[in-house]
Amino acid sequence: MNLRVRVSRDVFEKLEKIRLNMGNFERCGLLFGKIEEEQIEVIDLVEIRNVKESSSEFELDPLQSLKAFETAEKEDMEVIGVWHTHPIWIAYPSSRDKRGMENYPGVWIIISKNDIRAYYGDERGFSEVRMDTMEPLQ
Ligand SMILES: [Zn+2]
Image 1 (cartoon, rainbow, N blue to C red):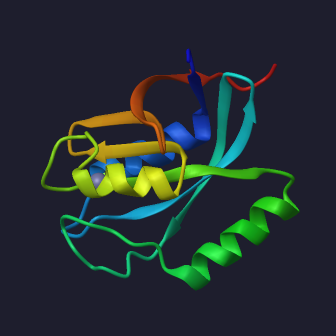
Image 2: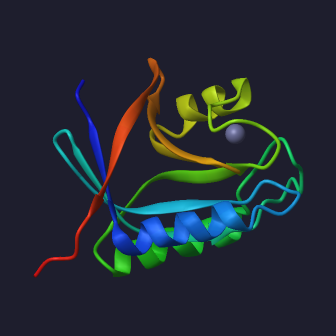
């Protein structure tokens, strides 16, 4: 698999803002976009409450998640993955994250204090994927 993740300028700026405002608990949310063959486009992201209120794990608030799925559908996008922060660890999947990827296959963006990394994971495992910024169309 030779996946590429392309992130809109808007999403990149949002990710940067999150990186600079980590807080003490993990922050998390969903990624909206499109998957075509080996090209994944992340067009928008939404923040969802972390019901765990923990610095080392997250769980998306189920009601807010449901609403986000509805919003994505309305805007003709798919929920293609999740993002979350690691306020006290590097931007690499924890063992808990790896289990999460088995249940929620897709793009996982992990943000640490000094890094933003993208992974693609499913029940077969995960690998890091290159993340490029899409320039807005002229
Ligand atoms: Zn994590």
